[in-house]
Amino acid sequence: MESNHEQAKHRESLKPNILDVWGPFKFYGYRRIAAYSQQTDGTKVSEYMTLNLMRELGIKSRMQKRYRKPKTVVTFDQKTNLFTPEQVKALINRIIELTCDLFKGPSL
Image (cartoon, rainbow, N blue to C red; front, side):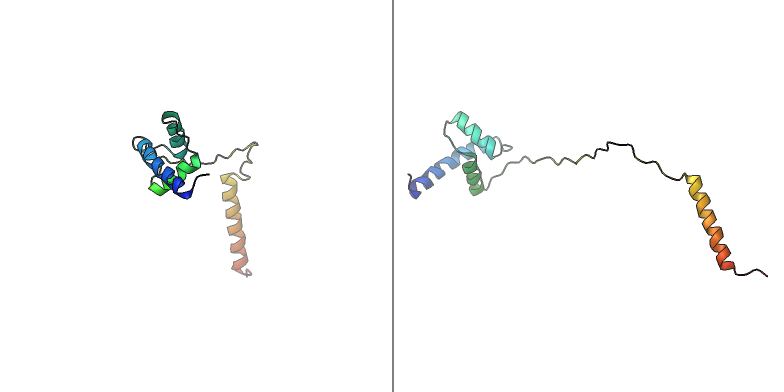
């Protein structure tokens, strides 16, 4: 088991490697940086360790997740309008006539 001092030394020795990978590839996230460093250097660093070291160094990936607008899917036919525009006009005129008759008062 490593002591805290040895762990700190190991962490400090990994920081330059992460910065070397992040320098030309600023769009790489912690997962890609961990995979890239394992492929090139051969030093096995977990993704979580890479993430923590990137946070300590204050570096982030420049790539952002795209927002995908949710799509609504309708599986059945929509109801048509119950009234046509002509029917709506006729109803409004009829309502106006009835209200006028109400407020006219008794005829003499």
